[in-house]
Figure 1 (cartoon, rainbow, N blue to C red):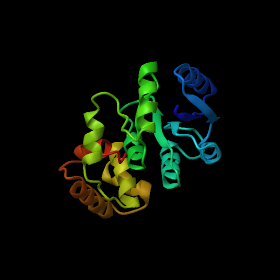
Figure 2 (cartoon, rainbow, N blue to C red):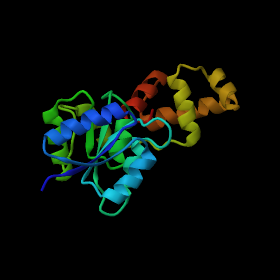
Figure 3 (cartoon, rainbow, N blue to C red):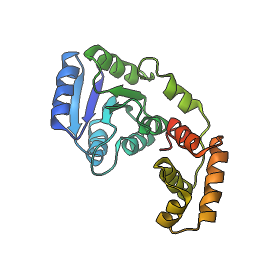
Figure 4 (cartoon, one colour):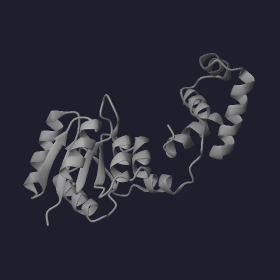
Length: 204
C-alpha cells in the first residue's frame, strides 16, 4: 500500500516542488500546510502515514514542536524533518521529540522516495554517514536550568562575565557560578569548549 504524505513548509514553491517529486514516485500527497498550527490540524483530519516538515516555519511553532505534538497523539504519523543545513542543532531536538529523521532540501528524488518508504515502515532516516548526529543522540543530555541556558547563549556569543551580568541583571559572582556549573554539566574545562559541546549536543 502506498504511503500517504502531508507536506509542511512555509514556502509555496518548495511545497509545489516536493509534491511534484513525491507524486512522480507514486506516493499520495493528501495535504499541505504552511504553518505548524495548520500542520497539526491537517494531520488530525487527514491521518497521513508520513509528515514531511520543514524545521523552521517562520511565525508560530517550529518543526520541533510540530514533531513533539504529532508523535504524542494516537496513531502518530512518522515525521521526517526537512532542513537546509545538516549542522542545525535543532535537528537533534527534533529527533529527541520523535522524528524518524531528516532530509536536506537539496537531496535527489531517490533519497526522498526511500526516506518516505523507510519512515512509513518505522525506520530511521539519516543523511548518509551522519555519525555526528548519532553520537549526539547517544550522548547523555546535560540538564540545564533556564538561567544556565541564557548564560550559555551569551558565552557562545563571546560575552565576558561583566557583560553577561549586565544583560541578565545579576552579579558577576553569580555569572561565574553559572559558568562553573555549565562546565561541570558539559564535562569540559573552558568556555569555548562549553559552547562547542553545547552545539554538539543540540543545546544551542
